Amino acid sequence: MGDLEEFFIRDTFAQAAGIRLVSIAPGRAVVSMEIGEQHRNSHGTVHGGAIFTLADTAFALASNSHGVPAAAINASITFMTATREGTLTAVAEEFALNPRLATYIVTITQAQERVALFQGMVYRKTKKRE
Image 1 (cartoon, rainbow, N blue to C red):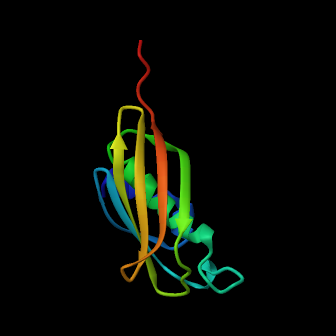
Image 2: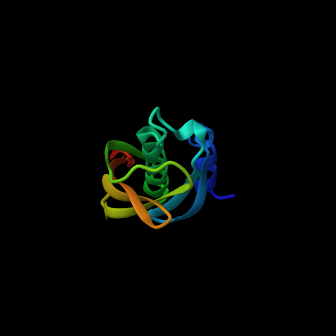
Image 3: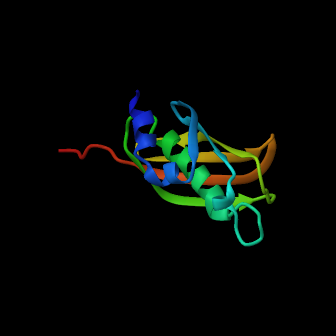
């Protein structure tokens, strides 16, 4: 098992949310979540926090995929449509990368329909100069 798979398994919040790792590569990650009762809000649609958690998990995996610890410093999400059942997929792709900062775009879909768009930036921890 690779370091990134272990990184994902140690994310107990993602595990509790029912998120599954689909694939991972440098600067890219794909995760999915089958919608259950625990993901619904009082309107019967998927809770925005559940969708954000799915996107944030893909973001975390993609941003840590280069072997440099990365921590989110900014994230935002735009919801495009409500959904009630099925499986959501989040695809995180690196948009910009430099030694200290990196930006990622995450597209959340259900059956090829866009549900939400997430953008996040991380601070990449580098060794201190001596």
